Amino acid sequence: MGTRMGRSGGDRARRGEGERRERDREESEFIEKLVSINRVAKVVKGGRRFGFAALVVVGDGKGRVGHGAGKAREVPEAIRKATEQAKRAMIRVPMREGRTVHHDVYATFGAGKVIIRAAPQGAGIIAGGPMRAIFEALGVKDVVAKSVGTSNPHNMVKATFTALGRMVSPRAVAARRGKKVGEILGRRESEAREA
Image (cartoon, rainbow, N blue to C red):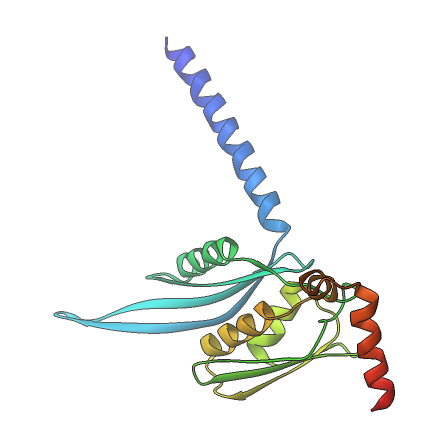
């Protein structure tokens, strides 16, 4: 009887190990970037109780990205909570040639204002702090981005996600307007020639 229980426990351990390996493989396909970590204090009767707040960006490097915030008494736990939230809240962003954004966009969130512009090949990611982490996780190779106003990472990240949410591909515009993609892109190229 003791051996039977031991064997079932071993099977359970093997199954748990397999699930853990599967989870690790799933996590490894995502690019995780820690944007900020902040120590927060709660004043209680016996003094101060410290905790940590983490802001994390997660992406697959192929056009999907998400952000999350987590709070806990320990740093690793706060990061884990933020990462889980980021994975649940991922959005898909259309990209041109798999390397840059389709068009320029401006967005705000609170006091955070961001401007994102498409860039020629070889320009690289010209962006600072939290915005750079988002573009690296997203898989964008060439982009020019500027944050105006606040340097608060939460507002910068949320403003950037608002801007990315407004990103539209020419195919989606053509479908919405009942036109061909060539008509939409042809107009853009002729306007550039006139300017």
